[in-house]
Image 1 (cartoon, one colour):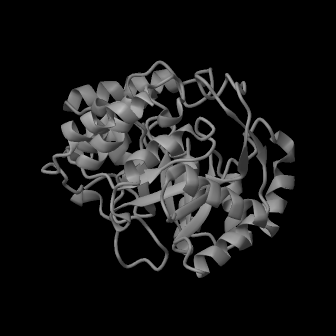
Image 2 (cartoon, rainbow, N blue to C red):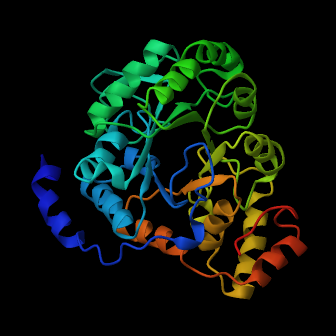
Image 3 (cartoon, rainbow, N blue to C red):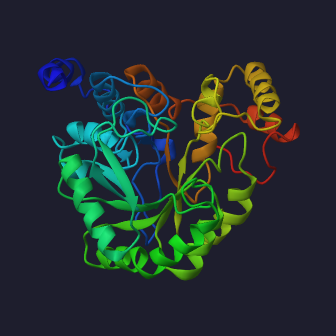
Amino acid sequence: MAASVALPAFVTDLSDNSNNKTMEQFQNSATHKRFRPKNKVGFGGVALGNGFNVNPDIACLQSVEAAWNAGVRYFDTSPWYGLGISERRMGLFLKDQQREDYVISTKIGRILHPHDDFKLEENWKGQLNFSYEYDYTAEGVRRSVEDSLQRLGIGSLDIVFIHDLSPDNGDMKDDWLKYFDIAAQGAMPELTKMREEGLIKGWGLGVNTIEPILKTIEVADPDIFLSACQYSLIHHRDDLNQVFPKAAERDISIVVGAPLCAGFLAGKDRYLYGGDFPAGVKEKLAALQRVSDNHRVDLRTAALQFAAAPEVVSAVIPGAHTIQQAEENAASFKEKIPAAFWEELKQEKLIEENAPVPK
């Protein structure tokens, strides 16, 4: 209730659209047969679901609107992010916008059930009032989509990702292939049917590893994948050399999730979504920072532009839960980075020689 009472104040403060500029350098080509967002600059919804910290409703709503006013028009969320919290917060802003003005993606794979004081402390902070069960069947897809539309308060989705169908999922581990087989028989053909019916524009997987993406390309007809944790200044070889070529052959595109390694490349003392720092990542960060300092380049800006540079990448979705974060992320796509910066990164072998860089 506090959020609804305070809502008019923040709308009044941020409703000026004079700064609503597109990031022209990162427009997607219109020549593709499969659906892509018009612009590569997106907004990820993990922080809106109280990932890492309990974030106030109003601050989260303001961050979404700040991104909108900066020109961002692609928004990604999931029932998993805060077990419904991210979808509700994101939808509270998007429900009042013209539907044709933005692209929205969410995910399927988990059905939420009312459950007061549900405990899941390792993932989402604060109060949780829903538990979950996995469902990758055709019926589960339809139910999950309908539930998401209700939470978002909008009438349609553009992209649906099958979520966390991956060996790094702690609930599945070695059994992930059993879930994959269920999805291959249920969720995947159902999403293809929904695309053909015009209910969605595209579908794929949202995962943190490359194996499920490569396997899905072999057995189904996906349009777009959310590849998280796999394409950043810290780690990008596998996506670059294994996933990107296979996707490009089928005109499938990639949404890059966690381009800042969950804040690691923006000064946060964490790396991705676990509690550990893998060997060598801090040393690589220090080396990247030295090159950035040499060229007076903001490392966070470089990380975001690097993730958006490949032609096969259709969007990059850094998260935000404050106005400042949202504005800074959007502004990073408008900056010009000198070619010498990228040349030095390649000379120092800090990025792969064949990695595309911004022009």
